[in-house]
Length: 422
Image (cartoon, rainbow, N blue to C red; front, side):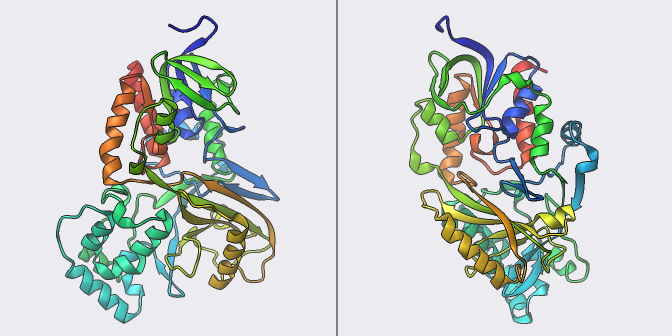
């Protein structure tokens, strides 16, 4: 029984990012409340517009497979601001550029390395695998794995790849056959789940603005953090008030939700990385005028990826995002990292004589969750426990999974449909 002075909502939604806003837009009623701890909506899909530069918290590009979802999102956006882009990406390897994906473009390596890659691929040990690292060796052989896929993913995830489940990237990990590798020698064909993407000249936040048009403004409370959830009373406590709920939908990290609900879990099962992102704006273009982002697997560069907003938006000044992975418990020295980034960008030739006009940094914590065998076993049990109490944890962090932004929107819609038979 709720106290008489507590307002009860049909749905309380924690998090005003893509998942939370999507769910609110799909449910067939207005009896909901969205709680967002930050002063603005968007989650990680926020955009900084400064000195003529447009920067996101990191590179957030929308890859649509579902035409209805794409239509739904585009309805609230100015079509003149939208750009459909055919992705151009490469890998910086031993001071040369190799087209992505690496495993289909090994013919661009020196002859001896090509021979190593083909030999190890053909004679790779075909056996069952359980870890991500074993999967790489088993699918692609030792040479391809050790030249790119292992060092790159170790930099990204900031962990031992043997601790990750072999399904950690699921459908997003590209398959390749020997025939496809050989065929690519003469006829380039590099498909991927994100071979094309859409982006707004106003940044990723324009997608958030589109989603928010389906939501009542007076139903969003920003700068209001959830600090406790009483599952027995179905009451949520924030930094400002208390509210009752019938359904609770959360997109915050699952581990945080379990702590708020006082739901016991084994913290050793759940791990993730942090990513430090630098957005850098310069007074002139760089020498790379075609790539949308470049992968850097080698340790001599501190970053694992550098993206070019200016090449996506056809701007006349170089505008970069630079990403560095860290373990979840690492203390990040932003100033020292910035100096290293600038040194390494010059080492790579990305920056030559351009002058830095402005820059911005953000730490994404969590950035990528570590999908481990133990977490894959435990997460469904915890989600089921929460469901029985009318609590639904969705999204990349809420579901503790690797997925696309579109996947989050579809999941939110499916939940709304299941709860309300819409």
